[in-house]
Image 1 (cartoon, rainbow, N blue to C red):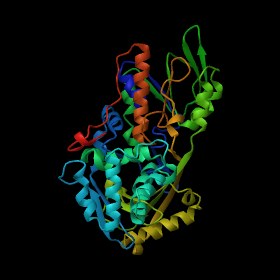
Image 2: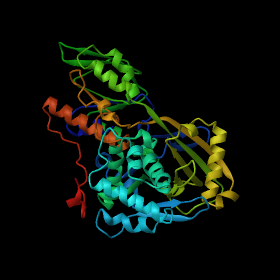
Image 3: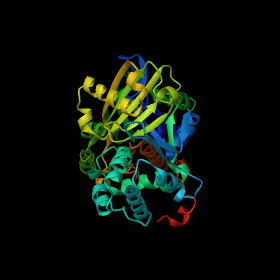
Length: 450
């Protein structure tokens, strides 16, 4: 979508082909038949550092549908609350007062975290071949810091185990969330179901001579050397589509299905190997409707249990009822549980954090297992991330897994679309430039950033 809208704005006539009946891919919503509610396939949050995602939202006119906060409430079993967030101090000190007063961490935990943050500030943690786990052990992190911060906040943000995360990507998250500026670390959550964010995309493209085709699947791509055009065979369309340029905006497994159908050229084998190097990590979400309000919070970080995050969708999305979404990241064990067992565990755990839930009745419930939620970012993964330019003429790649410099996030997806649009414009002589620069560090970080 970000590539299509950018190219439409640049004057190209774009056809966006989507195999599903709705837009958004892994960041979408749909009517769940079991509960007769529109739910997100999993909660997707953004941060202020997501400059390209925000630019995409601004382009299609939905930036005002994001709720922003700079405060992260942490809850321990039993209900005790503490928080992390910004203060009046200049970056990178803006988060220090709340960290030092946070009851979820012992004094030793806080010393550990400050030591690790300082190491990152001084340039450590940038080795693309070292795991986060190995780096943390070298930094002598305490048990509390490991369990309640690194394994929860950071590992869940990157949706993987600490020993399967490249420390360079963890350092990027730390800088964005806690160092560069309060603006970069602000957390944003959609106030509407995710697919409603994209309702303006078909109109945006139509106004510029383009269109969206839903329930349409590309089954074959053929390059016509004489006309210098691609011919696409699309299931659900009556005729083949001929076009000057193609952007394959696919997850890596979708790309793998199309690669064998493309002509043999230099670079195809390398791209195939890159695609085959990636792995998925799941995210699960339990959607619970209670017969009464169980919390006044709109979101929270949950400590020491299987579930990691709570989002109060009745408050965030102004939904009727008392609708709570609970998210569990980076655990294949939870994803493997049967539905009833996983939901029972979610209901039991939510009662440990919100006492009102113990006497409340669950009116209805849904469990979503997004087994292909993200791609892993292990040490050395950058060698498996191709550029937007493919080995074939006039064909470009997009998707969160290509070489964007970011982990598996909505920002990486939006950024990849803008990179592909820029590459296409450059090759065709267009003037469009859409890749949005990163936010500049603020406060003291203007002088301390390496």
